[in-house]
Length: 182
Image 1 (tube, rainbow, N blue to C red):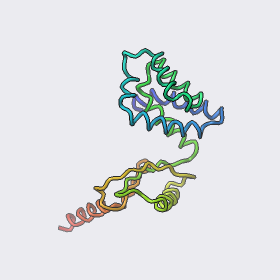
Image 2 (cartoon, rainbow, N blue to C red):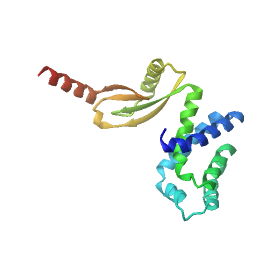
Image 3 (cartoon, one colour):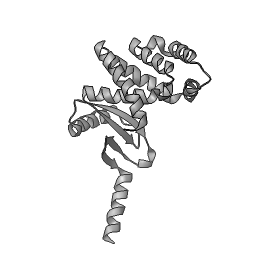
Image 4 (spheres, rainbow, N blue to C red):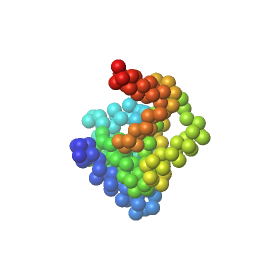
């Protein structure tokens, strides 16, 4: 187990356990997704929070003033604990690990989908049904991104399983089969 997982897993497990005991797991998971998006989109926030110049109390105050009224008490307590223990630098790893544990608990498959163009609602519904069937889980959570280099189609990654239905993939496979013939 990588070092970051060794550090982040106990925090993530504790958050999941507290959220489950308070029957707010789904709410916390939604808040974790939002917090993770903000954390990833704000290098200034990350830099300030990992700075050794800022005292833990100042970090806690800043985090609670930014997010306090938007977060459950259990998630607020996690932020305070990470700041106190000077582990706020691993916040993203803890949040990602929490979401992994949450998905396991709820039998949700994470499907990372890269498409040549944004998928319509109908395409997402069809893809959702197909991925559910393949994964054998109750529901699917999509991480959607767009890469025009695919030319057309999409690529779906579920753990170690990859479904390449892109034109770029078809061209690559055709090139490989032609190279074998020649």
